[in-house]
Image (cartoon, rainbow, N blue to C red; front, side):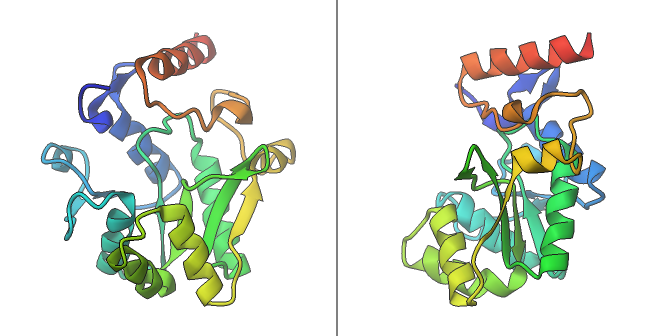
Length: 197
């Protein structure tokens, strides 16, 4: 994208504002993990103890810095996620006692958003220390180490049952549009413009 993705503008707002708004609308206190020097203007930043190791390092640092029993993680490039999805995931994780809760789209589990219990931090940290930097594989390893499979919720079923909905009536198929390229950004702009107009 030619710049820090968090600061890429969509609909006149940087992508970081969409992620933070989603967390806040879900009733959560939002902070930023693995952030650049410009991020404290948007929310408190969890310092990365090992910069350059990717999202898993940010997840570990965030879990280590919170006193909450679990944390919700969003990636900055999913600006179309509705807050109701995050709130439902958190509720499900608490009721089911799941150590890691994810969403699937068309049967494929997504790495983010994720609800992660602090109990898995030692396993995630061990994966990071061993150089296994993939979040999804670390989540699977962590859940398995506690004899608990990943809890994966199908987004289509949640939307069809009315448990989650987008405030602008975007279909669930669009919620996971990753904004990674200028053409992705243009598609997201088009979706927001059509629904807002």
